[in-house]
Image (cartoon, rainbow, N blue to C red):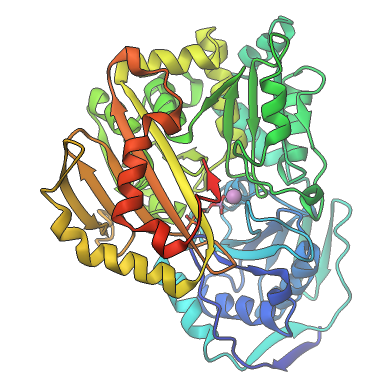
Amino acid sequence: MKILNKKTSPYRNQRPGTSGLRKKVKVFQQEHYLENFVQSIFANAKGLKGHLLILGGDGRYYNTHAIQIILKMSAALGVKRVIVGEDGLLSTPAISCLIRKHHAAGGIILSASHNPGGPEGDFGIKFNIANGGPAPTGFTDAVYETSKTLYEYQIVDCDNVPLDKQQTCYIGDMQIDVIDPVGDYAQLMEHLFDFEKIKSLFTSGLFTMCFDAMHAVTGPYAIEIFNKRLSANVGAVINGIPREDFGGGHPDPNLTHARELVERLNSGPGAPGFGAASDGDGDRNMILGRNFYVNASDSLAIMAANAHLLPGYRQGNCGIARSLPTSRAVDKVADSLGIDCYETPTGWKYFGNLLDDSRITLCGEESFGSGSDHIREKDGIWAVLFWLNLIAVKQQSVEEITRLHWKRFGRHYYTRHDYNAIENNVAEALMQDLRDSGPSLTGQTYSKNKVLLCDDFCYRDPVDNNLSKNHGIRILFEDESRIVFRLSGTGTEGATLRIYIERFVTDLSLHDMPTQTALAELIGIANSVADIKNRLNRDGPDVIT
Ligand code: VG1
Ligand code: CO
């Protein structure tokens, strides 16, 4: 085995964001760009040498190219064995599952999640640690520091490894197992949910579903689990073949991007009773009923309130966590169950310690993400199975389950307004001004609604005591309404401003308003407090979810 010492020079823009390093494909195609970042990971991931690495991605353009490079660099590092998905495919939750199942030292995930793919699209790379979850910020900060002074990397000079069939091969002493990407994950799902009961929904002939894999990585998982193991109806999986460019679409499961699915669910009495979609790397989910949309924060709350009804969660929740911008619907459930509810910064990495320390069972984010202690990533197919199992147990529709939940706990109207590709300095100034003016908002009244608190969210991890700051400006009102402002950490073009708005309504007669109408007053307050119109010079948000 011939190890080459390659000379390189550092790139200055390799700081990982909310979920790994994400850049345009064109950026990753610069000479040594990917190699530099991988070497920076290897320099900090001390456990990899002599151990097992899990490797795969969401199938987007550049995925297999990156896998070949990483395999050759892993052999140069002295990794003992690599498990890689056939055709280079592994969903993010499947990688988390495999790391845990095979006691790997870590995993590398190649994905830019819900960002578009193809040569003009985005690419990304993320390192997960031995617990199966995203590396914590201490690690990603260290990787960034290394990348700034990196002048050399090591790679084996050898042929590409065939990834198109399941087999075992070697680079030098390093064993490479090309495996079925679905098997281990599907087995874990069977352990958590009552597949027989879900199957009886479909065999009754009265229930149909439609899952939109959005031409991304969940296609093979959905076909194996929904079609083969659960005998779902014909047409249960659409867009099920992964493509390098996601069929030219945007693999983001929301009402804007999963339009084909939404149209099917809204197509009248013959429409499927259940609809769902996942994102590029399979960790997100959107849940729909016939002509009915469940927002992700409500979905988390409903799961938390009903978990004890499902086989994998019979013992109930030991606690719950949600990210800061996620609505407080789940807090009401935690209150009623008498368990802790943790509020964390955005990004799954902040749930890892809480899960490892058995402080929480379920956790989730407003951005179409939910998960549990079964792995250390959010999990799209898992959420779909959770809902299917719940429907099978309750024998109620998605809409009935959701409305009864609102009746019991109150309804949290919720929306997120995104302004994309803003100039960085404009976005930074907007946030800084909010930070500066925040304290003076406390005590002020807007449309009879008093501001109880305005601050920049800080989080002290209760397990390792680490403090992390500046995670978003939150304005809390007396009537439990809330506005949160933060900048995205996953975009690849300028800055993205996210404004999250929620309002809590207990009065049943007010549970039928269109969301944007119910929130109109608060949206107005948010826009005026941040002076959106003047600063951004736009008519409205680019994406509303
Ligand atoms: C977004 C979401 C966040 C999520 C992250 C990764 O981050 O808001 O909730 O954890 O994407 O999701 P940001 O910083 O752009 O708001 V994904 O499916 O990568 O894996
Ligand atoms: Co994702």
